[in-house]
Every structure is written in C-alpha cells, then in structure tokens.
Length: 87
Image (spheres, rainbow, N blue to C red):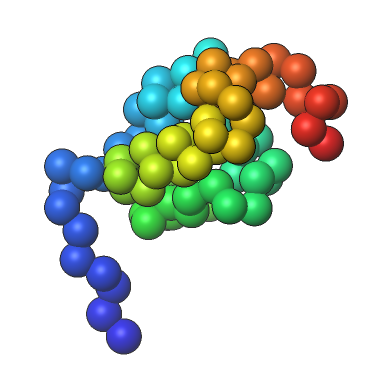
C-alpha cells in the first residue's frame, strides 16, 4: 500500500505543533500524544521518534475540537501546566 500523498507545506515539526497549541515547549507534544487518544499522530515518525512531522490541518482541527470541548483555546495550555486535572 502506498503512503498518502500530502502537501509538504502542511508538514510541521513538534515545535510548530507546540506553537499552534500554545504550549511552552515542544517536548509537551509528546505528553499530548500519550495523554489524548484523539491527538493527531505524526504522519512521519522516524529514528525512534526523533523526527516527527504532523499535518498542520490535523493539528488545527484537533485544537478547534478540543477548544470547544474544554471551553477555550487557552485551556489547552492550562491543561499542560496543570495536568492532574485531566488524568
């Protein structure tokens, strides 16, 4: 089976994912991968997770959905600062 065709301009790193979500550090993206079952999976995951790329539209859609569920876009970053609320 061939991998999906993607627009390379839509590929973003963990740093860009963190920026979109308002997270303080790109390492928090790994925390989100483990914490939220519905968090978008990287479309590129090489070298044991050292190289990960996501699709920008997937991350933006997830953020939009999460913001509606959680109440506001700022609540995503707040969840990272206070993770015990959501475990």
